[in-house]
View 1 (tube, rainbow, N blue to C red):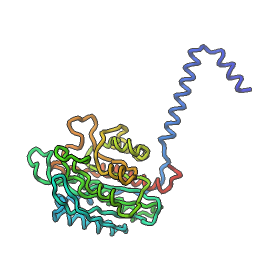
View 2: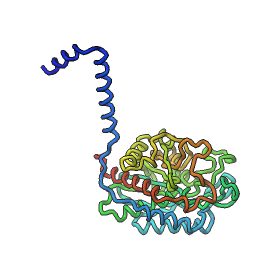
View 3: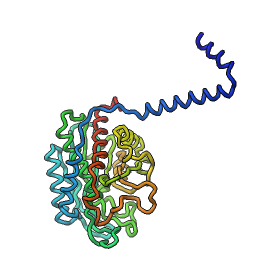
View 4: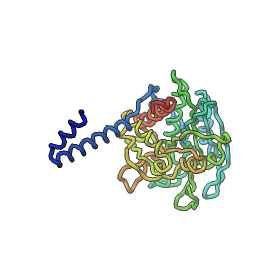
Length: 341
């Protein structure tokens, strides 16, 4: 009876007004549905300590540029292994010889730390830990190595703090987490090297073709690259959207709910050749890249001191480390309770 009353009411309205009401009703419904889709019930997760992450970055930089075949590289690698073990992770060192585009042989080492190694559901987190051997974007010191505070150490620092957070959490997530520090990522040259990766990403290419555990897989992965600079912006990297769009949406939606939308920009950015590509294409694990790219800056894709001798601790802001680290901690704890996703 109520349904018929509504029909009689609409029959008395001008057609234009009826159209307006229908359109308004559709819009309201669509907006409500979008809000429901974007809203994720946040589970309780421990706080990510940005000051501790900052100290992990500082410790790496204190070794000096971590260029493969150098003493600083070897010492820093040993420190990473010791630190992961300190927090109870099962550590695998994947030693290999990497051949660069200019035919140099590098004593390289991928370092893998596994939290809850027996868990069947696993999430992969990664960053490269080596430093670029030449500051080709520097106006004066093009042949000097890069200190690599942001381009390398920042991502590693965030992941070391995540390892510490998992180890000390009172409510540990019931999933497995594998942290991989890829080596020999930054010895490329896009002007000279003719391979698909322009000489970059040697460590991730090796791991993708020679996984540390035969048949290893993960639900998804997240790569961190240049995640510590002041005022950083993380656009949705193009290959990540193409190859793992659902993971991008989950991470960016969580970051937004946590209040980090000024860092995690809801905009598709450039497609960047990085360590996540071999993981996607060869290892067949959907992995996204959280990487600092600038909005509407054609002249400079990355942060101002990228590939220069000025990539020092002055670049690093604990607020940026916090935004990335807390988002990833939330991702892990959400994944441990998939019914709330």
